[in-house]
Length: 403
Image (cartoon, rainbow, N blue to C red; front, side):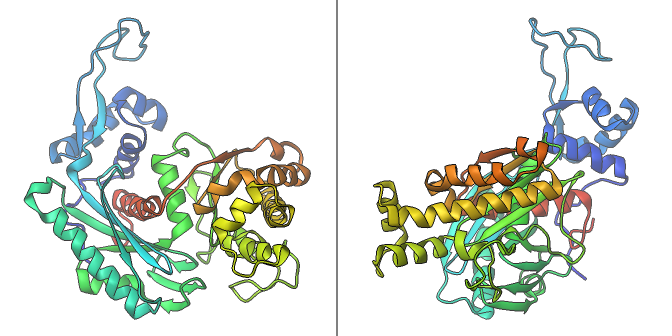
């Protein structure tokens, strides 16, 4: 049996979960507004909030109404409104991001606000090595949380974000080509050593959860997060939920077969988007077209910005394939917004025009109205995404964070 959170939430009903979710993602927010957005009665909202306030998870701070504002509610025009706000320091969460070269760890509060950051270099990608380093990094962060001087809330869980096919229900990394892992029971190993609930999830899906609960997706009906860097990933928020897929796989934009068939992907298949659009693929193409086998990525970017047609061709080709892949995804699921993120967006200007042209050429009808938005992310943000998945599971009472 997995350990329970150090600080259980007093949520006994689905209404309580819905109310806390609204306060957490959309607060500060008055009770009457929660009632309007959820369809619950004000009495039901008050009943759900009372134990949360008593336990110190939520606070009720009266705010004087703006004399120039027209506030119309069941509280009356111009009367003081008492918004409900989550007490950020009521709990702490740890988020860990795994890359082939580094581990990134963050401590966040209940609102996914980053409070501490630690990085750790990896000597290799062997599962045993990485697991040991994750445990070491997590213990360092736990010590900081437990330091009385930190004033941090109790730790309720640890989230780990890993690229590839991840079985989040059982905490198993089924296949991560970048790490060279297959069927690694990561959550069980970490839980046994740390005695803390652990959630392991796909890194792009974790980033999507963070955007859904604490970012651009808070008020969006549907959106997608597309990450461009060493790989090309996609997370989807459709019909009120981040899509996980029947088998735990969804949104694998980087493995759509839209590139030339002779190109072999890191996954072992041919013609994947990543064979043209990943940073490694762009660099390989730039080396080939410029005849500079020792060229690094920054050098390729510099040449392309300087107008070198051979270097530019690699970015143009990537933009063409990314735009086509975006159009295919938007045609299929119809999000209102696509957030383009990841370490590769720093060079977005090099392929933006070709990408948008390809998207416009292949988007069907009104799907072409979907907004494409650039949002820069650091590896710290990926770790924060892992923490956000823990916060969501904690509020919902999902395994292994049972209340």
